[in-house]
Length: 166
Length: 123
Image: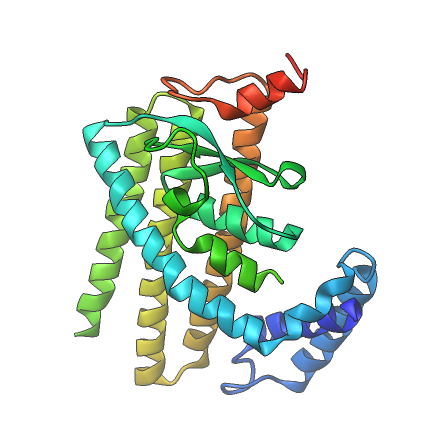
């Protein structure tokens, strides 16, 4: 399964990088080389990519990811960037590292949530501890020293991470 | 008309990248500097790439030269790579800094330090 997934996505990446070699499309040589290299990449990484690789083929996941990154994530980045810009100009900061309890099940959800938190400025994930269900987040302006959920830090990101990482 | 959209995107890019580098000078320690240096610049770079994509698609429409299609697609691939690696790198730097004993300056709370002390992983 993971072999097929890696092969497909390597080939799609190859197509994106070599588009326009014959008119707007691909020349036969490029396609053949792409198949060969994707086979090599897929074969060598077949034990590295986990068992649940099949979820990378699910179209609903991809639609979800695109909606998430263009909608809530981008809007969060806009708001947070203006906030950090304000703090850079005025120098009003109150930094600290807070423990954020989260309700997530697997590593993919932790990755999505901590990367989203880090991408929105003002918050920076220092460490994720799945064994105690918590993230340690450096916050540039601490509003709540002991948050009960991830709501004050990341808004709706936790719901999205739970849905997308299943 | 399209030129003005490109100029607007480039202006946003320059403002946020400038603020990001300015924050290196303003903020007191490694964690707060990471906020400015990695995140403001990501946001700025998104708009730099958008400007390139709009310009390339516009040129593609006018000239029909496939090299502009390549330009747009390659920029988008670079943007995706940046969005995936930037938070990971920032997280790695921050955790390494904390584990090697850099205290957050002016911090009101340091829960991570308390956790490490509880476990007896003192330094």
